[in-house]
Amino acid sequence: MTSYHDRDDWTSEDQSGEDMDPDDVTAVAIHHPGDNRKLTRRSKWRIKRLLRSWWRYHVRTRGWRDIGYQVAVDGAGRVWELRGLEHVGAHCASAANPSANRRTVGVLFILGNGEQPTQRMLDAFGDLYRDRILPRYPKARSVVGHRQVRGAQTACPGDEVIDHIEAGTIDGDGSGAPNPPRPEWDGKRFPGESAFEIGQSHPAVKLLDKRLVAHGYDRHHDGDGYQPGPTYTKWTRANVRDFQQAQGWTGSGADGYPGPETWARLMEPASSKPDRDPGPSDEGPVVDLSKLRKAARTDPPRLSSKAAYPSGTKVIERALVAEGLLSRRYRDGVGHFGSKTVKAYGKWQRKCGYRGADADGVPGAESLRRLGDRRGFRVTG
Image 1 (cartoon, rainbow, N blue to C red):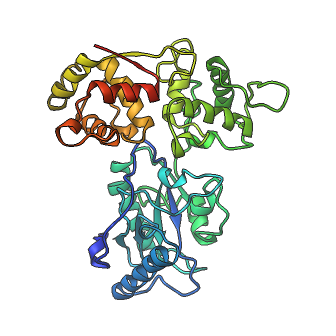
Image 2: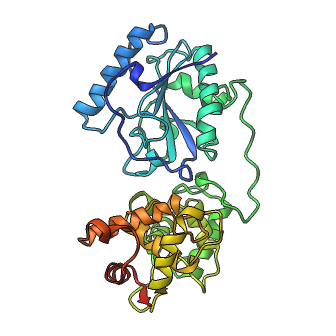
Image 3: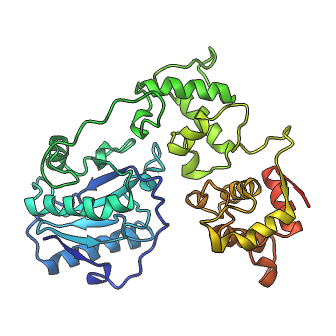
């Protein structure tokens, strides 16, 4: 049976890192430490020493917030909590793929260069993946090596681990059976992020191009106009980024690579553009202050009931996401002005200079007007 070891089994240092969004995570990335020593037969005591040394290197030498990987597996089949599955790691992002850390769980295989993973290691990873990773991140259906992540320039996790991944002996059930082939794309649903790689062709790219054109995001091209086609190009990425930024997204949310939310919004009728932030020539949506205040007071304790003011709440949630005060995961799609939205609006009020009861998360006229001025909506009531 796989043994799990909490972080405090090897260090007293506090965990640190942003929360992972389950909607963003689509894969598990396997790593190795790149050490020329033999590591698979190390005792529990020596494993702890190794983990502490890697923590010191990542934090004190590289200046990271914490050790880079979320979890580790050793040769004896022990699983070690590192940064923690709930936190964004620092293990595979690159200039070509800056959002990779948010989209993958980093698992460190504690083995040296040239060492084969032990059967206990493979079995323990299967247990970890099936029992702990997939329940938290159900979209993480792909297991890859670090060097297989888009943009990576590394030999990690070594040929020995890559051979097991490609043979299907590193999988989610520990059975050693090859992973089942992905179903063919049905022409409508989100095809997965692997469909959108620079220079790669996939039929979904042509549909993506058509939707970009329909929504008016086609200003980047090779000089002959933007023509829909099956290949994902740098022009496709630039147009996708424009669309994402128009939603108010920043950072990894506007990296030019479609995720499920980008896909869903592009598939919506172009005429309505429900989630696009208004431009300078747009009048923008209208929010009723009195209805919004009522929603902020009545929605949090009864999220299972009908939302009090869904249309206005969705406008506010989009604005708070764009300000970086509300995580996209808390936009419930129904328009409840829930406790997370109240908390986020309180942050906006404090950002405006309010304190105490004036920053309780219930919108006031001045703070709402200022948010509307920044995010393109008007306030009445």
